[in-house]
Length: 81
Image 1: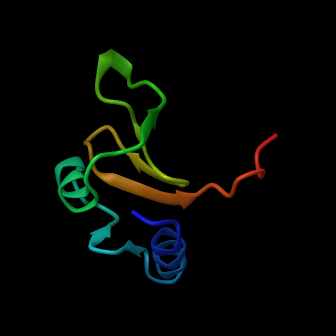
Image 2: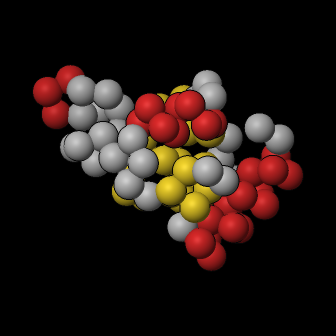
């Protein structure tokens, strides 16, 4: 995914709650199918389940205990201490 595409999709997401074909409530499988290989993961799940946060460039996809997408957010570089 190109940086310009991510920026455009992130702005659309801010307005609509959708990141391209991915929307809140989507399954991990749905996100993986549409967005392809992820750039990284963050966090740990209780009981050793899959990581709760998937990273695609500077966009985070947060999954709940039922493996449903419940938050999409963009981390702007330099915004964290």
